[in-house]
Amino acid sequence: MLVNESKLQGVSTKDLFSRMLSEVPWASLKTFVQANAQVLKLATIGGHRLDPKHRDRIDKLILREAEKVDFAQTMTNGVFAVWYPVHEELHKRLEDYFHGDEYKQFRQEQSLTEDDYVLPEPKFAEFFGIDHLPEWRILLCFSPLKFSDVQADRILDDSQGNSLLLSRIKDLEEKLANVEKREQQLAGETERLRESQQQAQAETQESRKGLRQARTDFDALTVKLDRAQAESRKLKEQLDSTLAGQDSYQKDLRQKLTSDGLRMQKDVERLQKDLSTWQSKYEEQRLQNKDLEAATQAARREASHHQVNAAQSAASAQHLSTFADLILQRIDWPKVGASMKLTPRMRLQFNSLIRKLSYENDRSLTVEGTLAEFWESMLAPERDLIKSIAQSNSLEVMSGDMQGYWNGLTDAFGDVQISLEARSVVLKMLQEIFYQVIEMEDLKEAVIPQPKEKR
Image 1: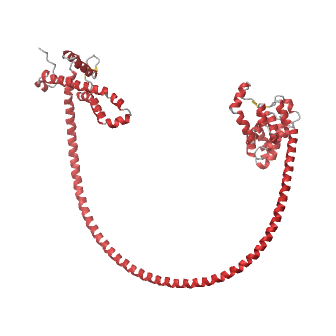
Image 2: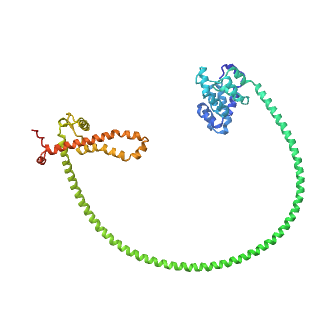
Image 3: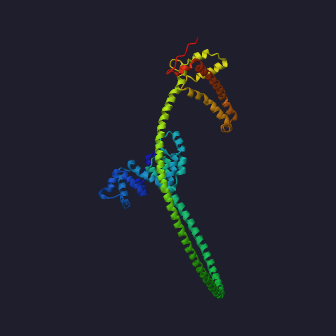
């Protein structure tokens, strides 16, 4: 609203509110009435409905309720909210400015709150236009915008409207002069059309002469038509002759089709006999299949019996396969390493082997898993290295760095060499264990014998 409310003295708030109310579309006005309980109650009293044909009654009712509260904002704000978007151009320009970065910066510079809407003088001069003077007066009275006294004086100045009226009268006079000038041009054009009409009449005389010539040409064409008709009759006779030849051809074709039909019927009878033969063979084969199915069931029962025997054999083999693992679990690995006369390199290899073993709770070293699993884990790096070398052509391209690819395999080469030497050490120890420490007759015992003391 105004900074100085006294500026609104002499302004018919009622007329402005009535104008604003009349410009609100019916759908928006209906929404406003439904949102205002007091107005809705008065509008529907007596069984009246919210219908467009009762628009005048509802407008008067809203105006009367607004007068009762002296056009307080609680009453006018709702009407203004649905009127404001109706004037799209003015609404868009103001909303784009107030929600833009330029106004945000201006508000910070002027220490304004987010609820303050003020138009700087340059922006007011840019947006204000006397063509929309009634809209600006409604904004002055009912919108949350705050106008300065200078801006209010400019909005309320009626002389601007008179100037606009004079400008429009001047424009109308100019348009009238243009119309008179255009009328003179049309008069000249009418004269030219009259001359054109006279020329057209002369051309009509020429056209009549052309018509007589056309009639002569028509007679000549009639003679040609008679000749063409005679030619057509001749062609018709030729066509009739051709059709007669076609009738003879169709008769021959029917005879041929009849002969082919008889031949096909004989073929069908022959095929039916073959079908009966094959059906007999099918029955014989079905009986044979039944016998084969019984034989298959017997074979399956025998196979199940063999599977049970195989499972029992596998369990026995599994029990026997743990024999070597039980022996290895009884090896004192630290003592074995101390008793072996190893070179520094062999000691490094042995230590690498020991790192592949796991410590138990009592700090003794044992092989992790079965002997076969332990041996398989030592073979895995060797297989990976051989695979990397065999597929190096494609893997170098995939890595995009040939030197980096081979540098990455340097440690793998060393690990595989150590693994080979470590397996050699393990084989040597296994040979000592199974061929010197264990007596062959002890293998017949049900339990693993204790290692014999060295003499």
